[in-house]
Length: 448
Image (cartoon, rainbow, N blue to C red; front, top):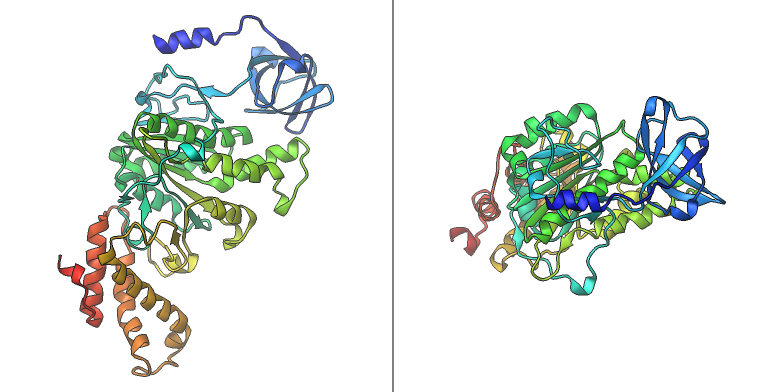
């Protein structure tokens, strides 16, 4: 009833409309009462047979509003009526959204019937909490993935990036995190995902157990740029709903790069100048506004632990979007094609992965274990070429001998099936026992 009352109150008292003055590519120019419109306003353009196409105002040029459509413009003619629907993009999420799959408008697409709306109207472009009002990140969170729990420990309210090229295993890693992370709710945004893979991810990777505590927002690659961008905004808005209710939320987004690409297309259509690799200035303005919405909440609220994938073009980890996101987030997880090609999944390069809350979030008894494991892996990486060519002679360096002895067991430790879960404490104990049994190192913590 509260939701119905809120919807009735949102009905405008009068109808204000303009007319379509030009259509150029995807850009629609609307003439009329532009003083009644604002950037982000929603308009409904009437086409043939009464079909209405939703558009959003992305800028102004002279006395015309520049708009982009949410769907195909087929059937829209010159002079078509463009009615102002709202001046702000809002949504009313509720707890009933758990276990559901929705589109960028918050409409159900899983065939399970209507979706209950909450009483509180939330802006899709809400500002992040002020830095002075936020609490600090919380205790370490158990992700269920050995490589991350041990070598890139994450805390509640932390934001991490997963950087990888296409086909390296990002989606499978996300499904493991969605199922095994110790959280109250998981909000998963599939931005620009292949349509074929959506059902596979939901049914096979996420599974009924994972879906039961999740909300999945989907905008496939064939949908308009506005739908892809709005799906990213909706993902954070839904996460904020559960955070404000006191829940510890896991926010997964695949991928931030496709959000940036959608924003680039919008900027170019509106006449923005291209800068680095064609990305417009608003891309680098919108990225921090989106990603900063994740993190710890205010006192008395929950938190949003954010894990965002970044699709690096051509496996170049220094391309503009990856570089910008790396500077915004609190750490990065690097997945490499070379590791995936030799059959080790998840293909995480732990030496290149960094969590900015470490080592402060790791108990002192485990720090020597992690330090020694990293040292041995770095030694093997430095000497790997010589070892594989047979140019290294056993016994030349005790340190290299230890690195060779421990390499195989460490690779097995870092490898993990998607149906396998390892807690954080178990991961530390396994790593300590591995070093003890292979090279005879002794750590007091391993016996506890």
